[in-house]
Length: 254
Image 1 (cartoon, rainbow, N blue to C red):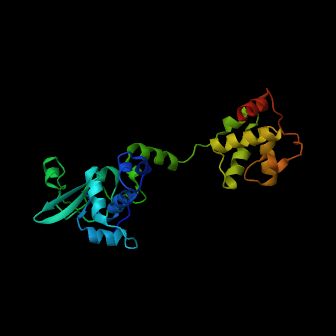
Image 2 (image 1 turned 120 degrees about the vertical axis):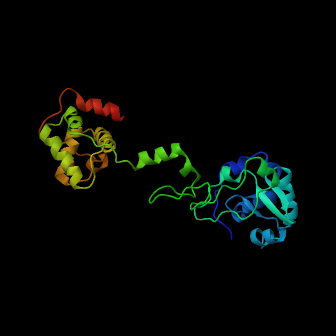
Image 3 (image 1 turned 120 degrees about the horizontal axis):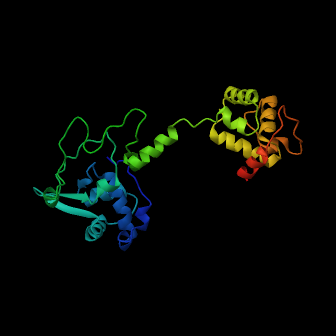
């Protein structure tokens, strides 16, 4: 039964694979979908043709010969039966955890090179079962620790901007608290990213962050955008900016 596999960009830039004909390259990718979780399948060209090229008049035997010549597959026999091993299959594919273990013995040379089938356990070999809400076994990057750290950082709650940041921008303590509460109430928490966007849009409109915040609260907006107040002059704030704080944020947002 064909299986879902990964096709990476490197497939198209592999100079060795480029030595093969286009039909052989397509056959190579197709073999991945026919191979078991260890990259093995029966060496039956007619059956492979029926699975991969049922609508095309192409002979699979020469294509397999090409792939073997360039080292992309190994064709071997055991007890009179012929099999194919896709080379370096597990370096490029992460089989689904539910796939059954291979029932095909590895090529004789593989046995001496440490490529024996791993012992059968309750879990399928070489791939850990995914945790609930955890890694996707069909994604090759899901087993990359560095990628996992990046994913964890993305899923982490974004840092919130505290009242001290707003006070430093010219807010009085009460207005800072009111603005943070307003943002939470409209389900748009004042994260550090949201605060940076707020300051940038305020500077774009020629308003101070405080004036923009008061406008947001007065209108019940989720956030401030310069286009909302195009051509409008800012109202006097309850606490005017001091110490050139507005100019500082304008420069930072530019």
